[in-house]
Image (cartoon, rainbow, N blue to C red):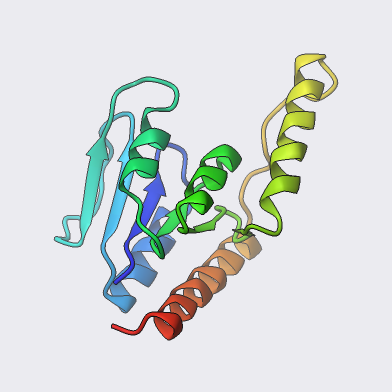
Length: 152
């Protein structure tokens, strides 16, 4: 049975993950650099890692297994998890796949360069309700796809 890992420190869709995971009977592990409040459910676990820049990412990569699901907005983490045959979904509902991760990594690099030169300031736009709806739909699609290919 797949497990859901959340890159949790700045994830805006944790409540949506809890709702889908509860309905589908999946375990959820939130990985964060500091303590945060999580529902008191036996299927939800909070893993607190060191404060280093990539500590949460490294922990997820070390523990994710093929067909697990990772929720993250971090493109480099998404790339590393895809290498381990995990399924990855961004917080706005966009799935990261072998077909689109190369372009996403390249765009990340370009935007980083532009920010470094002062061309772009600010972060990503706030998540909107349509992003949350897309996320819920995509997460459900990923779970159903895994279950079709790997029935319990």
